[in-house]
Image 1 (cartoon, rainbow, N blue to C red):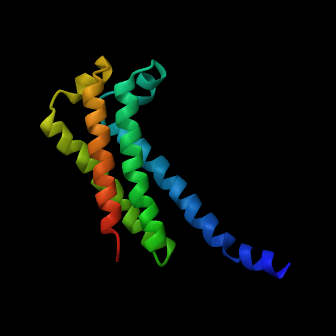
Image 2: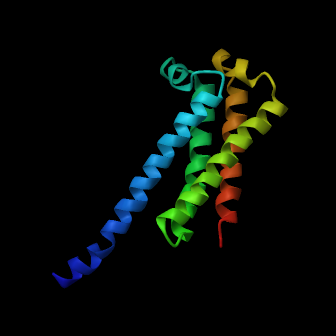
Length: 136
């Protein structure tokens, strides 16, 4: 029984970090879908692969540094600060892609997979670099 008690001794930290991370993911998605000029979830429900690829890559691009912030943080407040940085970074990536592909707002509803894949890949790549940079 001591082993089980020892194993579960970090359960409260797990719950706080996991719960906080779920809140940040929900916050990120809520902000991101309002920043883009198209409705990702409606497009995905219609079978739009471009929207699915872009949102999936962007979401993973946020979750990777979010996970790094959990691993490297000393307190949930610390994790929240770095999660905020990851959130802003992903929004900036979207802005940068819009500079490269100004018509991306029109491409997604049209189902142009190349634009969706590109946005998703750039977002995921930026998230990987963001996560790797969180080694403090």
